[in-house]
Length: 287
Image (cartoon, rainbow, N blue to C red; front, top):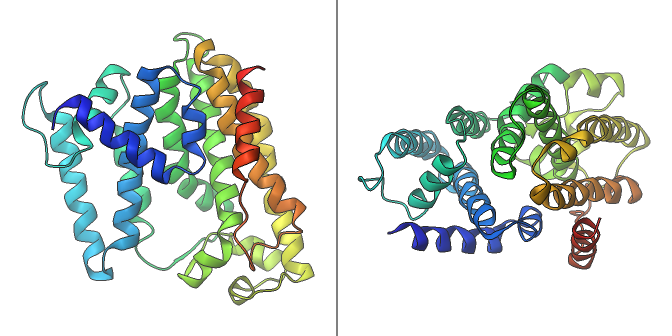
């Protein structure tokens, strides 16, 4: 498959699967939008491997994907790449925007960490998990957005990391019951004990007062990371700012919906409706 065909494949994947990300991509120029779709297709495939393979085959499938990533990144322009439709576009995007390769291996490490039942002891451990599954995504895409080299580069990277933490904490709150049913409890054990909540409380349908207090605490923590990462928008290429504003606003609004529901995340999956995402796009586009 040639590069344009590969980009077309990745764009189709993003349109179909990227429930929140794709809306923000629409505010980018064509080149950056295609690159975002290529990176998203890579992330989506990583997630699909961890979710769809038989338990006994997940580790082997992810190991093969890591080998394919290594081969793809080492291939020369026009040379042979592993056989998957996303690779030509992925390689072009990584090369064009000079994205550090380590981020993609970190993503795979994050996916691999979810192969077994999971409990998190402390927030430091949760932060490390969020870094590998979300912050590295932020660190990757700001290279596509573009940010000024020089004095603010380290700060921009740190803010992108914090933005990823905010996004993943929001996802954890939204998916808390589904994750618990799959033996994945991401809320730190130290927080569960502090609020006298058990893992079994996360598998029910009703949110107890104690659980509501815990979820409010975690939502406040997520909100703090949104606030701390806000200056990132002003550090990237002006042509990309509307897209990043929209992406942050959509995820932040998801957190708002969770809070406004009274944390009723055990009985339903809370979403930002399409009409609201479109409104966010318009507001982000026109400032």
